[in-house]
Image 1: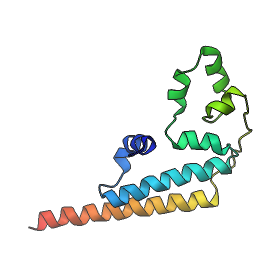
Image 2 (image 1 turned 120 degrees about the horizontal axis):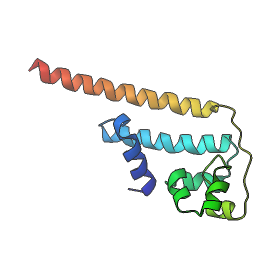
Image 3 (image 1 turned 90 degrees about the horizontal axis):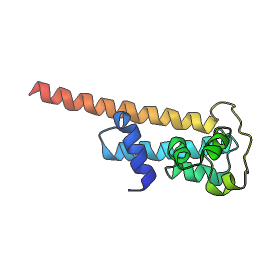
Length: 129
């Protein structure tokens, strides 16, 4: 399992479906959502990639000097090493979720509902016996 999938599984564990196929689909959609919304917000692809690969803001910040931590606080997103070193900060757009992002969120909700229904059926079968 990739580092990013492990991080997502750990972070999202309470909301992930028990069904492995559904939880894998859910995690793929989280990955797709992060990529789409990163682009929609004008975050460079290289920076989106390090975020999707598992870099978190707080984890990255702890590795930096105090001066660089203050610099990072002004970015608004998790940069890749190259952009941060070269100070290639992009202005990000805070213009809401993209249409594609909205569709991904809707599909994630469908997966959660499907998993909940499976759990209900499983529970009701146990109580009927």
